[in-house]
Amino acid sequence: MNYRKKVYSNEPISFCGNEKADIRFYDGALRHAIGTKQYQVVRANREHPETQDDYGWTYNHAPMICFWNGRFFVEYLSDRVGEHEPPSHTLLTWSENGKDWVKPVVVFPEYPLPEGVYTGPKKELLKKGDTAIMHQRMGFYITKDNRLFVLGFYGVSPEIHTNPNNGYGIARVVREVYEDLTFSPIYVIRYNEYGGFKKENVEFPFYKESEDEGFIKGCDELLSNKLVVRQWWEEQRFDTELFKQPSAAAFCYYTTDDNKVIGLYKNSLVNVSEDGGETWSEFVRCASIATSTAKMWGERTEDGNYALVYVPSTDSMHRWPLAVATSPDGRHFYNLLALTTQVPPTRYVGAMKNLGPQYVRGICEGYPKPEDGHMWLTYSMNKEDIWVCKLPVPITGVETEPVNESFKSEKDIFKWNVYSPKWCRVDVSEEDKCLVLRDSDPYDKAVAERTFIESLVLTLETEIIPKSIGEAGLYIDITDKAGSVAVRILFKKDFGIYIRTNGVYNKAAEYEIDKSYNIKIINADCVLNTFTVVITCEGEEIYKKTHKFNASVNSLERFVLQTKDKVNIYDLESNGKDGSMKDLPGSGEQQKETRFNILMLKTSDHITDEE
Image (tube, rainbow, N blue to C red; front, side):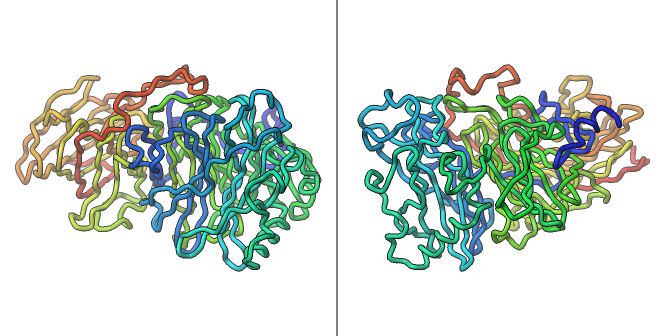
């Protein structure tokens, strides 16, 4: 037995693949999971809070997701500037398609701390008028009779280094979301008596006081569900009635075919229950799953396999990429693929704002799922913006069919990867029958990419119509599986089309708004390191020339469209936790919109005589 297998032999679950994320790159230089869509739910905006949630608070984190009555719901907590710094509240938003989200509403408001009750660390630092800090590892519960409950926890942080999930907080609160998207009153479902908080010193009523018998029944049902309640352990860890065994941070779970419940936690911790959550094995730190404190998520996917989602990095400061590995049995995971490929800069200063996509959560086992068969996830970016991820099942990073696509509806971009911020939308225009990339964000970009058959020699054709030009342009790249750019064509904002070769941008032609440009990349050859470009404008050839690759690669397999090249000014030396990063100027202001329409894409992986 080799050393690696010896170390991993006692792990309850293992990553058995050979891939490692290279975190010098935001996608880890991994293959990308084909068809992954990233949609921004909330874009923090201090300058124009009406575009966010009417508050403009810039610490937004710990989202949860569920699907109920034909809608997606996302809950997240929000602090004004930084982590564990009051004021703090929890918000809720919803969407019918997962792309377009309503303006978030406050579901659990700021809560004034009762004086002289808190018994936890640093209590001497509290003063009159201080308010609670929201902290919850669980957001939703759907009852057996299809009621949707949203939950939160009011914690206490006398200063930012005193965690509100240390067991001394106030209470777990719950309210029902009705079918008309109104809410019940807020009730306490569990007081945190160890912290000194009881019925007589907490403002909200106990759930048993509700006049709705169905609501009371649903809360009782929730309290009896040991797997769901185990998610509460951190905040209420001293509640020995709820927790017969100690737990760990950020618990989630899935059940295997042999009815074993796999418990996942931060820092690669895993344990197993063989009796539905009554008792648990000892924790094992699974070294094969190289991650830290950014949370893990596991679930059984609609094809009967299992998916493990985590940040495959031991650097907790720089949490990227978010990646997925798959398993046929829930124990042995393979094929690590990047889900997130971009990390925009942190726009607003704030304490404890670790960088990157983090705190991933999916739809809990046993809850309803959308009929599309996809895996749906949510995460925060830089602890500032809230995102969702839509991942096709079965999960793969390899294409086996040639591409020959036009764009009449969203179904036509099923295999496209999309990165779509609020101000850089990527979607299909059914009216214009095209894929549309827009960009009006000073610090982000739109990205659409298509994986094709891994090719030694590639011929590719696309057609593009520039519609408006602001501060961005359009980069057209052909890359290898790790993202190394061999071929690049640029529609620059100066209305020139440029070919990058030998590390230099050479102007090939001028372009005009609303004219159609057919671009052929002929015989992009990984042996000769050359490619031929032919550009035709509405039937007239305006450019043809053979160029050298920008990077020598073994093969080609991704076509990438993006409105900017690099947007992030931070690297692995950047510190997002100590509050030293500066606010970026103009973060809340939209720029003039850049828009490009893409009409088609076609590839072939053989030598052509078109040259």
